[in-house]
Length: 117
Image (cartoon, rainbow, N blue to C red; front, side, top):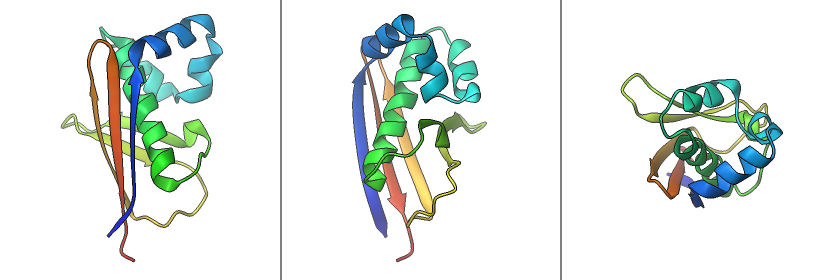
């Protein structure tokens, strides 16, 4: 049963501009694993924007915001994106499915929350 759906679209340039203007932005929003992964990529701001969009999409799916770092996006060995929820809060879903995509100018993410009841 679907418990929540969220989608977010963001301009990559917006993330780049904020990150360059305020270096603490990355520390506040992303986990060290997320930053490390993105720093190793040719188009790091596209990857950062996709992670930002995934977190926003998750917040929309649960209907509220939690700590940014309590939601982490990483890739399985297959390359499939996966959300890890580190919050101690209890949620009414069993699984969080995520899909991300990014181009030069935009990143998008969709989250579907699934549960038994």
